[in-house]
Amino acid sequence: MSSLTNKRILLGVCGGIAAYKSAELIRKLQIRGADVRVVMTPAAKAFITPLTLQALSGHSVRDSLLDPDAEGGMGHIELARWADLILVAPATADFISKLAIGEGSDLLSTLCLASPALLALAPAMNQQMWAAQITQENVSLLEQRGAALCGPAAGEQACGDVGPGRMLEPEELAVKAEALFECAELSGKTVVITAGPTREPIDPVRYISNHSSGKMGYALAEAAVEAGAKVYLITGPCQLAGPERVSVEQVETAAQMHKSALALAAKADVFIGAAAVADYRIATPAKEKIKKTDNTLTLELTKNPDIISDVASLEQSPFVVGFAAETNHVVEHAREKRLRKNLDLIIANDVSDQSIGFNSDDNAVTLIAESGEQVLGRRNKRLLARDIIQHIAAVLS
Ligand code: PMT
Image 1 (cartoon, rainbow, N blue to C red):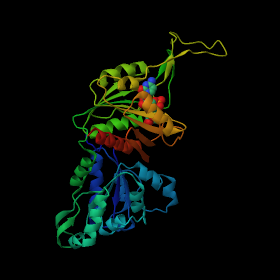
Image 2 (image 1 turned 90 degrees about the vertical axis):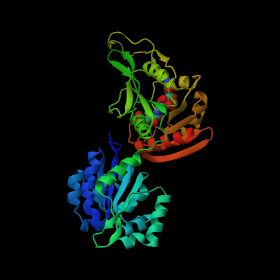
Image 3 (image 1 turned 180 degrees about the vertical axis):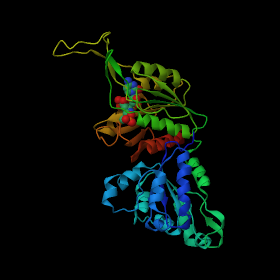
Image 4 (image 1 turned 60 degrees about the vertical axis):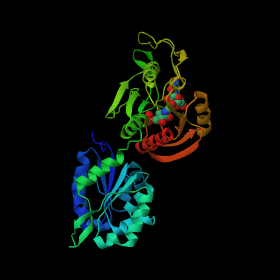
């Protein structure tokens, strides 16, 4: 599997002769499993047509910030949140300069400003422009702010000059993009993650459950694998494909999740409880389908075991991370829950907001530990998962 599998890459194309290579780059990224969308600067259209890039990417190409029709589809903020990586290839001296001063004067520069995604730049320009002190200063400023620099290569240039400033070849860029998602921060560690809902049977055809889709837990599993960990995912019933390189255990009930979790936690370095575990189950599920003879039906519920508390109570307990799904006084309730369940870290999310939390692609959380708190603003769950995994890795190290 490539580390670009299922990754969402926003390819930014600027106005330079190397823009013709962007067509091939789309293919190279797609072959590795990435979903690619393209945004062009107005000048890029002088070098390659939006239609070419649309045909190759399979999505309409955006080039204008002030296009009401395009905004009616995936708006620019949505696009900024969608991306896992913004790869600007070619990145011209002009565009690099715009980014360095924080300008948002076109769609692509605005997206770079508005997105929490990884940013990678593949410079392409005349060797003298690349060598210019201002370009070098701009590039190092962007690197200090976290942008990844891919290239440039040296060689013969379209203008006849020879020197550094050629955009890397599409294959090299795709390999670099893959490397951006791979890190070794959790190498040698074992991470156990619970995800999704549990189902508590009422009778053979009915159950009690909740709205968890599993997206948060699956994204954490993917991010932990990318960080080099051995990952076990214990999942309630979800519609998601199991992430590759992850050992997946399917369970239905809280009792089954409890059993799997305690067995796996014994060999884990990190345990993350992202599952929405039913707090109660039916005391005695009916063996046959319950007939609707009466106007009311009373169900007797009994408390489920608290999986994460039991993991945290193990003699050799791993680093235990819980989630707190709250609808009011989110942070206060989460703080109390961390102490009550004896967790190393709790991640508070507001599930009353339907645009984040349950079943949505995005989330916004507060990380709460003994040592302090950190807010991670709204972003897609995959990016958030990477940030959470990085945070955990930093604490462990
Ligand atoms: O799956 P998604 O649609 O992507 O939604 C993500 C999410 C909202 C489900 C996720 O971000 C989240 O908040 N998961 C925890 C939901 C929850 O059950 O929270 P809680 O506050 O009730 O529980 C606190 C912690 O105890 C959680 O880590 C939970 O997994 C754990 N728990 C709860 C009950 C129980 N019997 N055993 C447990 O281990």
